[in-house]
Image (cartoon, rainbow, N blue to C red):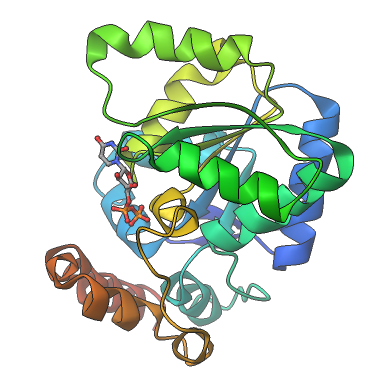
Amino acid sequence: METVDVLGAPVACLTLAEAARTVAGFVREGRPRQVITLNPEYLYRAQSEPELMEILHRADLVTADGVGIVWAARRAGNPVPERVAGIDLLLRLAAEAGMHRWRVFLLGAAPGVAEAAGRELAARYPGLTVAGTHHGYFRPEEELAVIAKVRQSRADLLFVALGAPRQEIWAARHLEALNVPVVMGVGGSLDVLAGRVRRAPAWLRRLHLEWLGRLLMDPKRWRRQLVLPKFALLVIRRYR
Ligand code: UDP
């Protein structure tokens, strides 16, 4: 698979459809693999946190989640075809799961959310089986039990919604123990599927302004989004 270097990270040169096909191949092959949809917040932190950068290099697929990454790749002279956002890839994979009768485990978000998201996926994609769910507020001493639950579910796909970068760190650390062919962090996607949070409207997304929509719907995000201008400056300086 062709990757391009964006601020030290190997980002796959794939469309959403191609990324979904690649991940479907991972499911068929069966050995545990990690998929990361990379956003600017993560990549910015990875500049000063070697563990985060290492996780990107060990991952089996890193996609450009967020217009910031797509833009940075273009400035670097290594364009990627389009944004491959976590929730969009999740939905494509859920459709594949429906067609191939794959089992999906949903881990994360507040109690009840993963169950509601699972009902939604099963209703939208007949054939998809929810192999199990667990909320994302377990204590460290509960972690082994959570891992065992996933392992015993015989899931084909595990979607981890603990927020970035925690979900990526967690997935990397437990990849072998989880023993699921595809483990992918999905951030707030379970909240969206469960109907707890609305996605920015499609017209805003088409204008590459999903970040603005998220900010307007959840003003507390401004603190997190402060990193975006810093990320932009770094990209401009690096790729003059
Ligand atoms: N979350 C969790 N456990 C935690 C912290 C967060 O399960 O200890 C969940 C939270 O409920 C939400 C998701 O992780 O469903 C993070 O969503 P957010 O929109 O912050 O993440 P992003 O999409 O920006 O990565």
